[in-house]
Image (cartoon, rainbow, N blue to C red):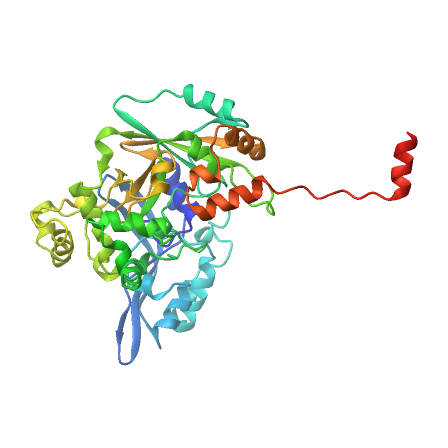
Length: 439
């Protein structure tokens, strides 16, 4: 749900609370079939109306669609024309999904009327009650802010004043810009809600393995390979976190000198002990091996199925094949709920960066998203970070800097270069110097 939805809108609606539901029920809605093609072109069944009586539980969201205009089967000369009507790409046209899009429904209706002119008299005039949705806004985001820190001391005080829950482990992540999302690089979207990398996940991984096969020879599990790929900058379904709050604070204070200083953020995760897994966990193997499935195969996964039914599907068989390549003993008992979960994973400390940063990862499953307020087993709070230059200087005094956080020779060289760079000499005119001497 909310696939192909702009990230900020998605975050404001994902809780599906009373305010979110009330907002969704104000929106004009297009109900469309997946596109079908033949030698004469393409077609879709298209209806226009509103949704009401939205209900949700852990597995399913349902609503009543109230029909206002039935366009019936609408034919297009080609898929590109169909995409231009809705501002959608091929992935969206071939995939069943909910999306909340930015734009004017009246414009979409106008483009449809060009294809079905006999329905023009059904189109509501702009400003009428039937089109009264232009001023509505989704609810505000639900972020728990512990406070503002402008020094190492104030940061640690906020953490100490926030008690940890029973049977939990605490992890941290730093963002140099508080507006950044808690989203793995693979699952990030463009501003219009389209995926940046997700449809190409399997190809990204395979191409890197082909190009640098020797680098991955020591990796026993698919998760190990994802960690290495993440280390080298490939988009993956992993989100880096740390067991050290000062490491997270360092990242929250990092910024480019040519950019204005903006608020950073440290995110605090209280993770239930049963959500903390190790690199060799069966659940971790199941989620990690989703990266080996094509986008079309992942779209076949139905997380609502019972275990036995799911394991009888073709896509479960393909996933099982990849899992058994690393765990030959694995039984045919993939749990659908596990595939859609987010788990915290403690990785092997196979490189100096993971060791120095006390690194761990959040591993995101199929269609998984982390709400601003967290979810069952993962509580989230935040500290807003200001006065970054002062904090960076403080951290450097206790040996938290580019050399220790990124313990590679290139990063050490950069840190030393910046640390020992001499300031420019200020040259003054002789007249100014004489005046100062006279003073």
